Image (cartoon, rainbow, N blue to C red):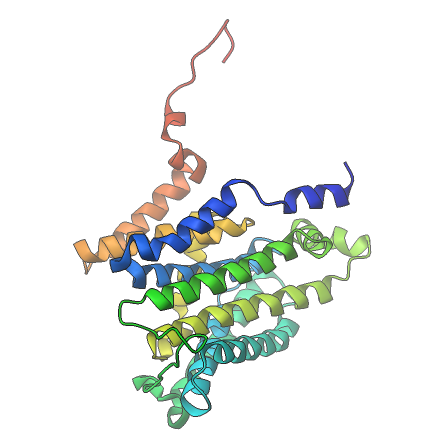
Amino acid sequence: MNTQTSLLKSSRWKPWEPVLWLLAFAAPVLMPSHASLINEIAIVALFAVSLDLVLGYTGIVSLGHAAFFGIGGYAAALFAKLVMPDPLVGLAVGITTATLLGALCSLTIQRGSDLTRLMVTLGVALILLELANKLDWLTGGADGLQGVVMGPLLGSFEFDLAGRTAAYYSLAVLLVMFVLMRRLVHSPLGATLKAIRDNRLRAMAIGIPVGSRLAVVYTVAAGVAGAAGALLTQTTGFASLDLFEFHRSADVLLILVVGGVGWLYGGVAGAIVFKLMQDALSSITPQYWTFWIGLFLVVLVLVGRERLVRPWTWLPQRRHGGRP
């Protein structure tokens, strides 16, 4: 089987995938009281999938992915407040702003070791956090950007307090972005990204332009993260310094640990598990919910994801004919 045939086979949709997305879009109707939570899950899933592009498929470790999330959120919120409240145009502005920042920052991740990239990406996020804090005349500073009022989606669907319109809006954007990223990772470009992840020196030796490939995927991932940030500020009507905080980058890394890297659905699955656990545990123990999530992560690492979801494999295997 040649490479082109293998890529075509892997890019085909599995029978369970359309069913999964149909259930996702049916969820706001089946569970109307949880529409806001569904909206949050869709946004976090989009953010996690964007990080998986650079971490899982390219091997770029980042602790500052919140920089693109935050810049996209602030750009969309400022556009809605100062220019026009159309959600789709504001979303495009957020994506464009984050993409431009990603293209600029891609110059910093092409050299150095993983530790260097960790520090550089974290530094970019901290710089933007401090800028948003100091430019209080524009961003609202520590008080946040208030008074963000969004117009109706497609001119017809108002953002209601129940969050149903917001949920469908975020799910639709997630699906469109997911399809585009799925196409990317199963393309020849995606194959070269995996080659860079597995062995950069070997990829350079066979003629893959490593620097330009890293720049492209980092820029694309930044734009997708900006879309997630824009969705958050548009559906909540508020932008704050929290968008740039370190915990944003840390949480999305934990989500990928839960769901798995190098698999786009890992970001979606991790977001569902993480947000459902966070919502359930914070309602039971508001002060100690992080302890239980931390304990779950420790057990996940010690036991392994595959064994945790299939507990029957913990049982000792029977021996047949003297063989295990």
